[in-house]
Image 1 (tube, rainbow, N blue to C red):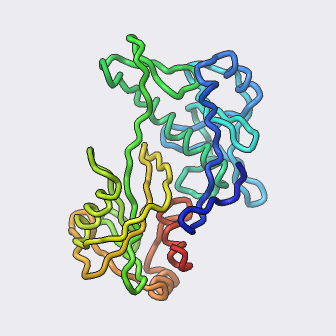
Image 2: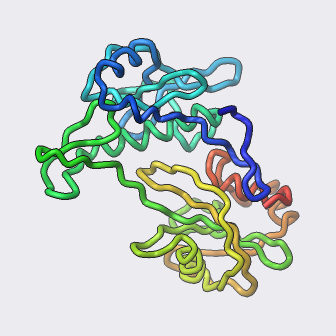
Image 3: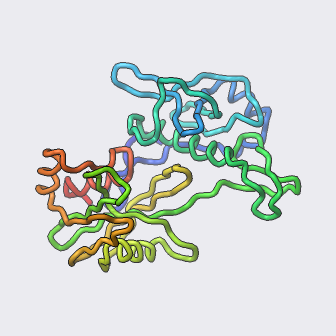
Length: 288
């Protein structure tokens, strides 16, 4: 796949580019050869990973290594390059997924590496029999002594751009955030709940606003440590009543109001690497 954007619901979003090569996992001989000719990304326990910087561009850093079946994770192939990852110290020249400096293809490599290595770091017990689990070559699964395969867990969350009939955008500030920081509303999907139902519940819980016309936009892995952000747009009209526990304040913004407050440095928005930042940017340009 190319790095061109895919069009979904009239909106341009990054296209999936990472081939996870699942047919190769579990084959130590093939993995050994691929690792010797591929590149290995080093990720530390905080989720930082090695990068190189040249002429204003940031790229993933790493070269070939001798394959170790219990530490080298096969991430996959992107742009004809096979990537592995392992835990280790990354040194001063490093980046995180919050930085937003990587191109979309290499970002997908880093997202997968950070998420999978974080799961392995916890050494989870078996979901079925609660025995300890061991790393399976390739790193896509873990296996217990009874032979049960265990897979990484992903926690779905919804993130919602709510607009009203005047095309104003709802932005809110969490109690734990630095002054001025704000974003669209988000929350985790509960057990036995659809994503659409979670949208209605979260907006009601956080700002007491009924919403409608809920439509899906896109998704983004957010491995802090294991979330999948499901982005939606919705409509709502009325007064906002922040819960005071999680949300300190919430406001409707016109595009001009948001532009003025950003120019005055009164507000701080999510970075462009986040799906929240992309949603707000699309609204600012009249494309949400």
